[in-house]
Structures are given as structure tokens and as C-alpha cells.
Length: 159
Image (cartoon, rainbow, N blue to C red):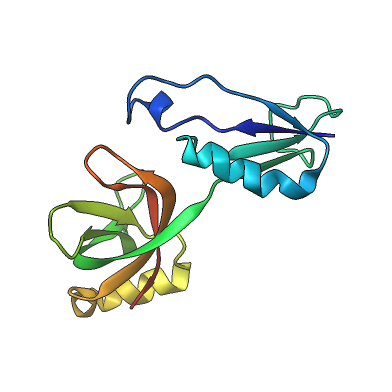
């Protein structure tokens, strides 16, 4: 038997009103977990945690736990490219983030270089002027801030 726990709701982060209470559901059939997960996401939760019900609780990564957060892809127009800077304040000679906007130009926000490899980040930084005006393909958690900015957005590739 498995236990499905919805992850913190967007509301509990103060983004969309008062927090929701965490709900647990016992499941005897793990085949329908994705259907249950979709229901929780539709209710405003970020995702779910599947936990083997007879396993002990461990406060770190465990083979008895599976976290699932659905994601969406979008693309945004690149306005600027920022260099990565170390914690010591040293310039790293690679892209750290992109300033982007939607097609409507209503929101401008930064997207971390996220899923780009080290080599890709260096190559993009070396030709940074050529990517301005191109589109950045991004992945983000389902949901948006009250300012309509996607949550936890990371770069995947430049189109």
C-alpha cells in the first residue's frame, strides 16, 4: 500500500490566498497515482510525494519516497544576458541568467541558466550579443505568481 501526500500548495506560499491543509490518501493500487496527482495539482498543490507506507520516515532522500511536480514549457524573448558571478564576486565567463519578456511585453523577469551545460553556458556567453532577440525555451513548475510570472523557471535551450 502506498501513501500519496500533496506537496505544499501555492496558497501556502502566500501566492494565492490562505494556506491549505495537507491531505493524505492511502492507495492500494499505485497505477492510479498520476490521476490522483493531477487532482491535487488542480486543487492548487505543487505536486505530490509518493511514500511507501510501511517504510520508516527518513529526513533525507530515500528510495521509499518519490516526489512528483508537473512542469510546463514556455518560450520568452531574450532581452539581456547576465554573466554568472561566484559567491566571492568573481566573474565566471559564462551565462548565469537571461532577462526575458513575454510576447505581450507585459512582464520582464530573469530566468536562470538551469538546464544548460557548462559548455553551453560558456559558448552562449561568448556570443551573448547574438542571442538577444531570440527565444529562450524554458521549463517551469505549473503555476504563476500574482504578477503572472512562472514559478521556478529554468532555461532549456535557445531557439
